[in-house]
Image (cartoon, rainbow over all chains, first blue to last red):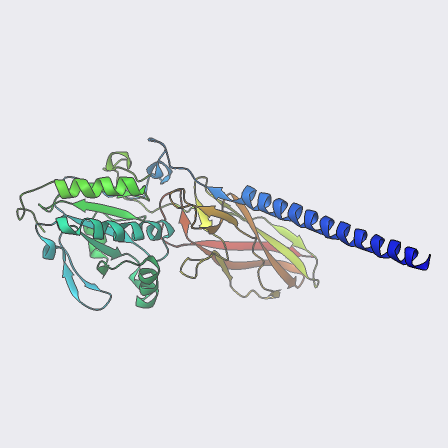
Length: 217
Length: 148
């Protein structure tokens, strides 16, 4: 009789334990779902703008914008992070992407790894990228950190203030100029575009000005 | 979406000083003299823009930060910033930022002597819209209050 009572007690404790475990599991799952829903609700992902509702539209009217399309890309000679002098004319006869960026610019850092990928993909066609650091005052260490994080290996140049003015005065970033083999700007973009758009611009720069060596680089 | 040059506004317009992307509403506040009170600084990020929060997710991003000058008869404690909102650009949703958009309030705990007071300072921030970012800017801030 005593054994029966003990067995009933043990069975009861086991049932209670299993019930507790099931409840804890269900409660934990519910809390996790709730937390995920809350995180999802507070997270904002902006969708690409429609034509006419672009980054340009959000830019206040009095902010300067580049306007180099169809013009010869202004020449420059600047130092790289490791102190080498690089000129735009070094790449005469080759398609070049001149990309202005800054360490504080989050969208710039999104497109830089894409640029690196395209640099490798189109290097056989002579394509080159020059990364123009707008905020040189951030210091070489900060610039080097971004370069390392984004994994870019193309030349990173330290701007001098004059080159920004030569390219139209850049009040926001990223800004990119796609220069063809003749040294002419065949496409310019302000703000982060899609990877496909960037590749299309690169292809355009590569295809344009097939006769090398006649531009102002 | 990047902006083709033909959509980039009036290219012939004369260059002017850029506007501020954050607006500060200076409001007269009243606190109890000699007791710890909390002043509120109300800011609004212009529609279509956001600024990094006080604690952005990367050391390379510029946090929103207020620097207040010492004011006679006022002892200010560490500022209390609101938490930011998670944000990412549509072309790379995996890259999470922490930002303020719309209205946000920064609290300033103070103990002040009786009288009218003015604390001067500045808000440093770095703004972006949905595709581009603007250089860091500073906005003058004047905190006006009376301790009774």
